[in-house]
Each structure stands twice: as C-alpha cells, then as structure tokens.
Amino acid sequence: MAQAFFGPPAGGFVRGGAHIAVYLVPVFEGRLVVFDVPVREARGRWLPWTVMGFGENPYETAAELADDWCESAVSSLEIVDALSFPFEGEGWELALVYRAELTMLPPGDDARRPFAYPRGEADAIGRFDPVDLLRWVGNPPGPGEVRGGGAQLVF
Image (cartoon, rainbow, N blue to C red):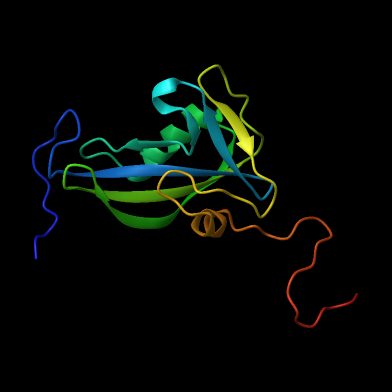
C-alpha cells in the first residue's frame, strides 16, 4: 500500500500529487450559509475553500478564509472534520473542514452572494452531502423550539 508522502511544493495540482484543502462551513443563526458565484468558470453554490500553503497552519488558513468570505463576522471557528478524497489525475486531497459561527450575514459583492438555507435544510455542495453539512451546522433548536421525545422539565 502506498503511503501519503508529499513531494516538494508546487505551484498547482500535479498528476499523482497530494494537497491539503481547508473548507469553511459558515453558520448564521443555525442555518448553513453558502455563496452563489456567478462567474462562468465557477458558477454555482460554494463553500469557501482553498488549498493550504506549504507549511501553513490550518487554523490560520481557515481564519483567513473567514476574513475574506465572511467579512470577519465570526464569533467562533473550530475544526469539525477531516476527510480524504481522490483527486483528478490520480491525486489525493486531505480536506480539513472548519465551522465558522457568524455574527451576521456577510454582505457579498459582485463575485459572490451569500445564501442562508432555512434551518435544517441543505443541498449537496461540491464534494459534501447534505447530511454531512447539516451535521457540521449542528442545527440547535431555535427559540421556543423543543426537540426529542424524552421527558421535559417544567419550571
């Protein structure tokens, strides 16, 4: 079995190469926030992501993504998952997923517009299935909402 040893840094994807990607899952008021990108080459709904630079700190990379895409409106940032994916050209991606709790919806611009799903809803985004996205969001109960079938306390 081949092991994941990395070669010297490269300026782009290399056939048979490996890279570490950092993904951001923005959450506002218990709702998944994604970005609509209108540019033809990347048209669609996306999570913020980037390929981590050689020797960089993953948390700092996630914080930079949050600053860039979410206008620094982040109250907490935590790693929620690490996943492995095959990549085009016989490559491999190690994906580090960070959850960013937002204090407000980002304003957006001509290059990207934020979209907040209704609470408890998500579509597949890129490599990620809705069940994973919702698990990372956490979806805590909303104001006055009670979940679960167990006993309830009355005060």
